[in-house]
Length: 320
Image 1 (cartoon, rainbow, N blue to C red):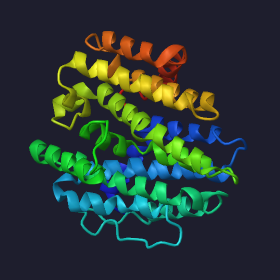
Image 2: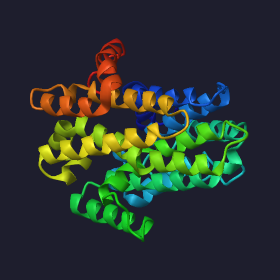
Image 3: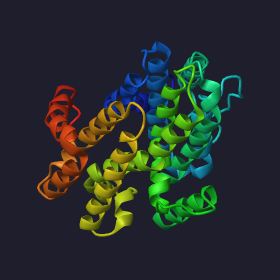
Image 4: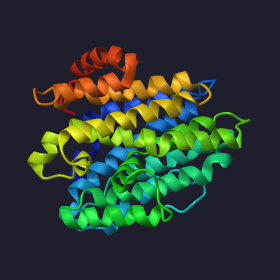
């Protein structure tokens, strides 16, 4: 990769965000028959997602236009036969040696191998477009960022929604609904009812949980760096913990109601344990809140938590 800055972002995303990649790969357990194309798609798309997050954070001063242009890759990756954009046209750094386009191309090829991809295509493309909200997350001007995020939520959900504006923008920033829908697309005989119920379980509730737990784990680091903290919108820490627990219980309830709900619960419990195994969740000031969230996550989450701490140690990911 010729550009040193982009190369650093790519290597950093692969090394520091290993948990997200492994978490994405877990969705490969959902279809009744294992699919190599689906697994490859999960990994390629997640790697692209993490790479773009790193680039847009580094290039935050280039503005929202740059961030939205970069994140067109997450739409293009899910649209076989569609256009391929110049993702770096507003970015200070440009030459990635074809890395991002290769991830887009791999994702497209894998989408074409999913038997029912045409049935979920419109929904996953909508989630890909919603992911452009990530462009606002790294705006260094907090007041301008929050106004833009709230305006985005009002525009995207004009008839209102039970979730708050920051829960909706956080959910769109997580992208889990697309992974679950692509699992449904592995089944040639998927039903419209299953597509709708799966999407409703993952957006916004499960995706919001992922975002809030990530924010919870990184809250001290975000505060020190002046970065956007989603859970800060809840107000006092005790209220934030209570709301996260409520989101988590709702997430688990809706996932359990799905066909093959047990498999969805394993993925969700693994996700919760992964976030709670971070160093930021084990500091003296966080232990009580972490115990409350683990309790809300149920028996499997509490069982997996020490396992994930060992896993992090093995991969030297304690701070990531």
